[in-house]
Length: 284
Image (cartoon, rainbow, N blue to C red; front, side):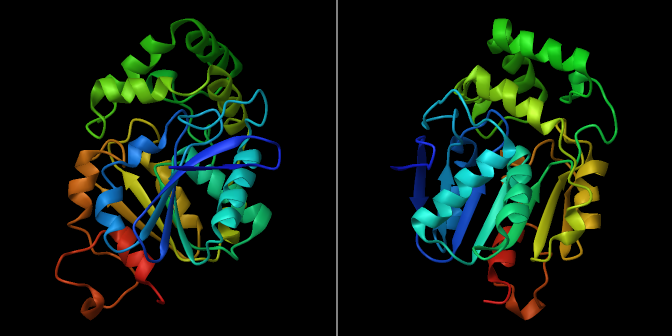
């Protein structure tokens, strides 16, 4: 259990597990590093796995400022610099993909050599839908969300837990971790996300990329997640047919059956590694 202090004076909590080539997980809106608890042990057998909490989330400090995707990208840069990590495979789940796209746009790929984008749209209002399907596309809907977070936060995330496949933490654990994030962080980051459009940047990404799409996702329409894979020239898209969200027990089980990646058949070991493992091994 470790921490670092950013250049604007915020203490960020992080953990490292295992040894080997580094894999860094970047979490979603209102989520903590605990959502990766089922992913860490298996990967840490062969790799160095780094997880951390964004500012205002989990065990990191909660400042009154800095809740923008670009600032979270800077926080990630400071973490990679602090640990002096190179040849990183970076895995961004939902908002975490936004953070990684911002990082690559601002700082390039000197430290990050491979990218995994999980269940995220390049523009949150690409295909309008109502908030019951976990999206917010207009001022009225955003205003309702902010009031719900301010005055009925636990109810909001209890409903969300019921809609998601939340077997990773269980329904009560899901709500607990989602509440372990400041209301200011939730509101200001959502405000920022809804004003971002990464569609013109995606074709500029040149590093090997995996895109994970849950066909039953209740967070992002699968057509929007698939758009990411279609528009990054170096990307490969992996579909999870019976999954609602990509860091659940269901995805954890299904991922062991997949071996799609840019490697030859004789490079695939008998224990059927996940697509992330195959990506890490590319060009190594």
